[in-house]
Amino acid sequence: MKFTCEKNALAREISFAQEVIASKNALSIMSNVLLDARAGSLSLKATDIKVSFETSLPVDTGEEGVVTVFCDKLSGILASIPEGDIALEEDDAKVIVKPTFKKVRFQLKTIAGERFPELPQAENGITFSLPARDLKEMIAQTIFAVSDDETRYFMNGVFFENAEEGLALVATDGRRLSYVKRAFETTVPTFKGVIVPPKILSLIQKHAPDEGSIEVAVTEKSIFFRFGTYRISSLLIEGQFPNYQKVIPETQKNRMLVRRLDWLDSLKRVSIFVEQKSRRTIITLSDGVMVISSEENEIGTAREEIPCRYEGPKVVLALNYRYLEEPLKVMDCEYVVVEFTEPNRAITISPEPSSDYFHIVMPMQVE
Image (cartoon, rainbow, N blue to C red; front, side, top):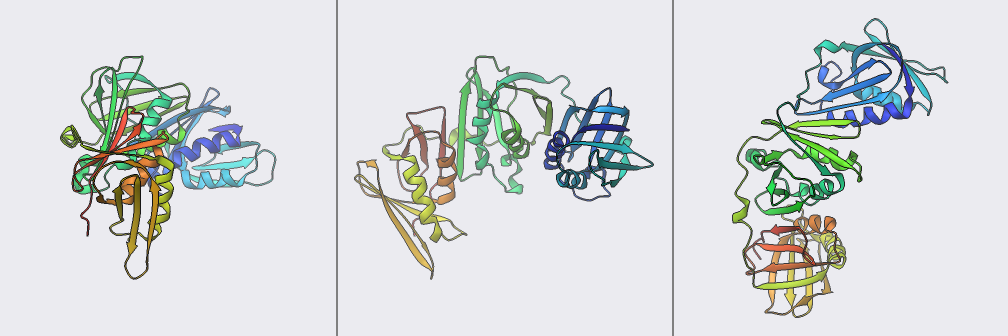
């Protein structure tokens, strides 16, 4: 194998591949990226077995061939080289990397391409296309609420399911829930709801463009996304997602309206004195005023008042400040509505005016 290409173009794709690869063991094929040069194109593949990545870029092919190299070191080599063209050449179980404009030479050991695992294919899957911006916005409204408790693996991903003329995404860790439902001009075919791991969704958020569309394919065990030259896939999480509909309150009698950034900024300041284990923040509501307070034992306290629109009896809520901060960061509105019935029952946070998403948070015990 022998080819020449623009350094920055290759570095960008190798950096993406490195995000997929989980292992940094130089002796493992799973730490390697596969390079396949032929007919003026270089194909790249990487996988951690669960998540897989494929892309291609144009190169000047001198000699066709397939090889795998340690991705971490190749990424470091490319980062150290100035802009310009570089040449890669396979020679006796080694790959030589050298810029065409500088007298420096790197040598990487290789592992034969035949040992690289086969990547899953989207054969016989249900396929559809979604606007990239919409999918990224839906992921942003839900991904932070995924559980990291591996004993409850069925909540370790975002649930995708059909909704009226579109798609719904749901995430929960048992103490909070985030939901978004969106309709599209193109029809989303009927498919059984699937649980998608957050790793592949984070890659889409980071690398997919805001414009254009993303092709989606769902098979029995995997999900595939294609945008631009990229094709990424992931094994689905097996198991039954919780019946989240039972968590969503039908009606709530109390309502409070507050400016989103006022509340978010106040939480950031008050959280300086939140105990990191419980993350307990106290929200006190009375006519026209919200008081946000926290206390860290033997260190100090914080308290701030902000205006709000609330008419009702004085109420004290104890909430995990992160469960408030994370949705407030991604909501795209000036004002938010908080609805609740009792201090020890679920509260709903939604945008004002109402939109296609909302967040539910379970309160903590007020001490």
